[in-house]
Length: 554
Image 1 (cartoon, rainbow, N blue to C red):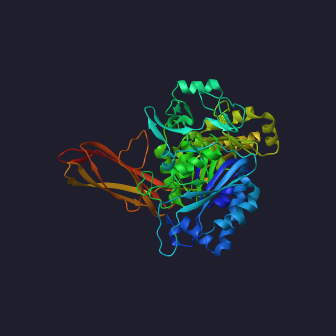
Image 2: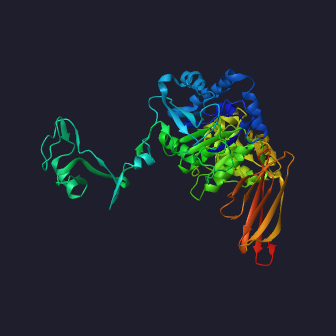
Image 3: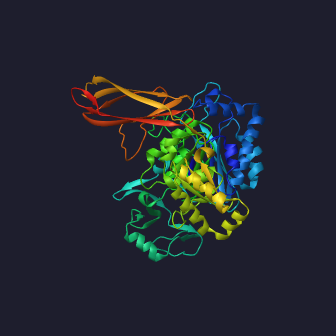
C-alpha cells in the first residue's frame, strides 16, 4: 500500500519487513551545521536537526549509519540504493557507511549531478554539483538501460537534409571478414565492410550513403538520422537536469530536486510495481515520480508540512486510474478516517493494529485480515448493531472451523471486529456469546488503535478590489484557521472541482492571504488549512462575477 508516514525514519524502518523494498533513494540533510537546513520550521524537523548536531562529524555519521543499516536490511537482494550528498561529508559517507554496510564490491557508481549553472564565491571555486552514491545489495540487482537526450555539443555534429538531422557513421570495421571491393571502393588494410554486400546495396538504394564527388560511396558515409536514434547511453556525469528557479514544477521547497532526476534513478534501478522508498521525503518528488511511473512507494518524513505538502502534490497529479494511498500521522481526524476509501482504510487500520490485511477483496467471507491467525473484520461505521455481530460470527466459523474450536476451548478470541463505535445491541450480543456459548469476540474501536483529534476550524472571506486595466475582477481572499495545535500553513485551489477533489494551485501559504484576478463568470475557490498535527480543514466559496459586482453563492 502506498504510504506517506510522519515520524522518525529510524523507528519506522525498524517496522518494515526485511527484503521488501526494491529501490531506496535518500537525500538526507547535509552535514553543513547551518540553520538553513531547517526548511519547514515545524517541531519535528527542528527536533531532528538538533539530534543530528549533538556533536560533530562522528555523531552525524553515526546518526546516518544506523538508518542505512536498516535500509540495507529492508532492501531485496535485487535492490539498490542511491544516497544523495554533497562535499561536506561525501568521503565519510562512502568509506564509513556505504562501504562498511553494502561492501566496497557492491559500489556501482559515484554519480556527479550538476545542480546549478553558477555559484560565485571570491575565496574558492563555485560548488555546483552534488554526489549520488549508487550501491547494489548483490550482483543480482536490477539495472535497466537508460538513454539521455543529446547535448548541444552532440547535436552540433549533425547535419541537415530533406529528411532531417543526420550524422555519418563508418561502413567499415576492424578485421578481414569482408575484404572485397564494392563499387570501386576497398575497405582498407586490416579493415572489413561492416555489412554484407546485399545490405550495402540496400543502404545505397534508400539514399542512406553519402557519395564522393566522382559518385563512389564514402566509407564513412552511412547516414544515421536523429529521429531513429534513442539517445545517448547514460554515463555517471549528469549535467542535463538543472532545476531552473523559474521552473513550473517548483513548489517553494528550497532543496527540491527535479523530477527528471528521480525519473532517471527510478527507471535505472526498478520495474513497474516495484516498491520505492524515500526515508527523507522532503517536498515529495520521489513519491510523486514513483506514482506517475506506476511504482509502489513509501515516503517518510519528520515534518508535518513535508508529509501534507507531498500529499497535496500527489492529489494534484492523480486521476481515475491512480492507486489510493494512505497518510499516517500522529493523530487523525475522525471525518478523514470515517469517509476515506473503504479498502484503503481497512488495510491501513489492520496494519496499525499489528495485523495483516487481505490483498483480495472478493470471496473473503467479509473478513478483511488477520492477527496471529485470528480473523479480523473492519466496519468503517459508527454504532455497529447486532446484525453485524451475527454475520461476523457465522463468517469466522466458516473461515476455519478447527481454529474456531481451538480458540473457543482456550477461551481466547475467535475473531476481532474493528469499528468507530458499537451500539447497545452489539455489546449485548457479544456478552451473551461469552456467557452462554463460551465464545469471545473482541470489539476494538478505531480510537483504541490510533489517536483521534479535532480538525482545525477555518473561515474564508473575500474582498472585491475592483476591475484592473484589462477589465479583470481582482479579489483578495483571507483564510483564518484556528487549532489548539497551531496552524502550519494554507493551500489554495482557485478552480476547485468537487469531483476532481482539491488540486492546489498554491501549496505553501504561511499567512492565509491571496489575491487573484478573474474573468466574468462563476468561479469556485477552495482553501485548506493544516495544523501542527497534520489535520486539515477545507472551505469552499463560489463567486459570481460580472462587470458591476461580485456575489457569493456559498
